[in-house]
Amino acid sequence: MDEKGYVFSPIAVLILIPVLVIAINFGEIVNESNTLATIAIGGDVTYNTAQNIFSIIEKSSADAGRNSAYNATRKVIDDNIYKPNPFFGSGTSKQHIRQNIVNSLNVQLIESCKELERQTGREIFINNIPINNYTNQTLYLNDVTISQDDPFGFYVHVRGGVPIKVVQKDQVYEGVTPPITSYVSISGLEDPYVWVNSKERNSNVIFKSPYYEDSPYTGKDFHMDDVVDNPNARLYELWNYLNGTGNPSGITPRPYYFPDPYGLSFFDRLENNTNTTSSSPPEVRMSTFVIGNPLMEEYGGSRTISAVDHEYFLGLRGIYRTGSGIEVRISGNNRPLMRDPAGSIFYLSTFYRNYFDLSSSYN
Image (tube, rainbow, N blue to C red; front, top):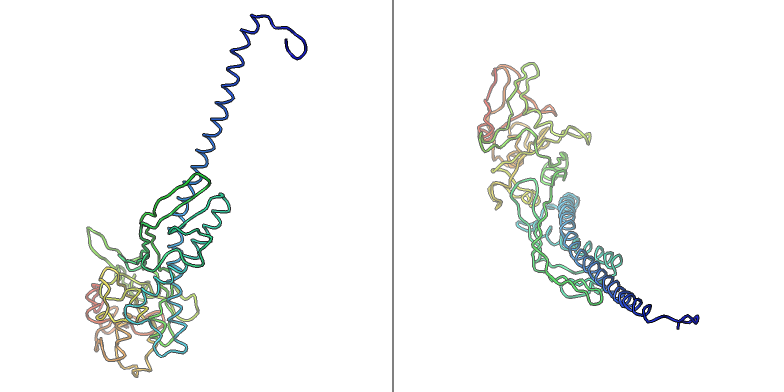
C-alpha cells in the first residue's frame, strides 16, 4: 500500500523494483561523473596555471631585457652631466643589465602570480616558497644569463630547474621550469657612445641599415655605390646610410648601423671600448658614421678623419688619420668631393674604403 492507500499487486511490485534499482544506480553514476568532471576541470586549471607561469617568465624576461638595456644607455648619457667618465667599466655593462633584468623579472613575476592566484583560487609556490610570502625575490642573478649572436639584440636565458608548485585542496601540480630564452632587440635605443664622445652634439639611434646584405651565396654587399649621382656628387646607397633615419630631432641626420666585425658591440658602446680592446666576438659588432665633424675645433679642423664612428673618435688623438686624397670624389679628381648630409666632406680610411669595396673616385 502506498501513502495514499493504494495497494500494489505482486506483479506491480515486481515491475517497480528494477525501476527503483536503475534510478538509484543512475543517481550514483551522475554524482560520480560530476565528481570526475570537477577533478578533471580542476586539474586542467591547475596545470594551465603552471603553464601560464612559464609564459609569464618568457614574456617578462623579454620586457625586462629591453627595459634594462634602455636604462643602461640612459645611465651613461645622464651620468655624462656630472661625471668626467660616465661609461661602465670594462666588462661591467652586461652584469649591470643582468641584475636589472633579475630585479624587473622578480617584480613582474610576483605581481602576475598573485593575480593568477586571485583568478584561479590556486596557491602558487616558486622555489618552494608561497608567492604571497615573497618580498621581492623569486629569481637570482645566477638564474639569468645573456648571450649574443648578432649586433642588434641579445638573448636573455632563464635557467631551467626552478621548482614550481600549484595547489588547490588535494590537486597539486609540481614541476620545474624549462630553460627559457627570450630575444631582446636594441633597435631604437640611443647610442651613448656617439652622444658622449661627440660632446653631446650628435645623437644617434641604433637602426640596422636596410641596404646591407649578407648572402650565403654572394657574400656581404653594402650596396654603397650602386648608383653614382654625378650632378649632386653622391653615391647611393652610401648617401642613404649617412642620412639614415633623417633628421627627427632637428639636430643632425641619424646614420644607419651595419654589421662590422671590426667595429663595436652594444656592450662595447656602453663601456667606451675601442675595437682593439673589445672582447666581443666579430659577429656581434657594428659600426655607423659620424655626421657633421662635431669635434672639428678639438683638432683644428685640418685632419681628414674617417667618418666611421670608432675611427672618427680615435682620430682626435691622431689615430686613423687618413692623410690627403682618401676621400670619395665624384666625377673625377677635379670634381666636387662627396659631402655628408650635414655638409661636411666625407672621408674614409683606406681600410674601410677597401672594406666597402669603394673606389677613390667615380667618373
